Length: 303
Image 1: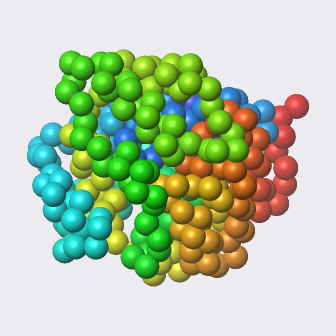
Image 2: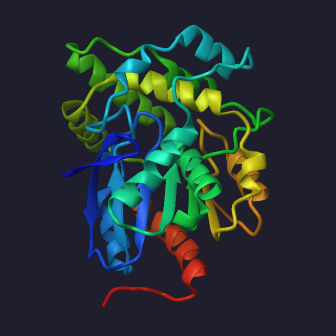
């Protein structure tokens, strides 16, 4: 996969489909590498007439590691997450949104359909709010607005998110933690078998393991605060997709996102949690295509 300089850092990315099509930019969530976007979804986006690009956010995968930012004070980060004093991160989700916009600039893409999941949904919202000239449409998946009054995730899901990272040389512990996390936050109505989950986790651990980077990403999420005022600026056609059974970011977050963006369409999926089951690829693709078709007014299904 290639790398490109954008917003002063290097971003690892992968492109699917012809370059002369409208682009769907896929922004992954907290700690997730580009590989967490199912290849099947990328192929489906291409089948529907678009180009798809997935990439590693800063501090994860093969993109730049922001080592000069140091190690965040996790006690203060977690305290802020649970309602304590505000935490000021080394970099912000707005910076990460500028990374995404910079990637489009570096690739010579004038505008794109912006899609994000979880933390990536937060970043995608900020691309649409801060960089409207780069945004054709917005699809926010399993995310929220940062509204402090929204309900917290289930204790077991929050525990999986905040569990200490195993040592880098303890591969089995790293893999087991990943498996346990996916099984905790996964979709009860669209379960992925254990062997596939293990394959996904092992693939990503072998590709990159950098827990201090994910700690900085968590700090960026916590430090971002309430985005509802910024979301009032979003003018791009928007679809909000959320699982009815999301244990990490409850469905109220999706409802609040849709309510905060003028004209947004809300799609709630029964049985969907906080993961990417291959069986839900058509549901993800339908949401992305719905937003894109509202932006262009035409269907672009490939021949």
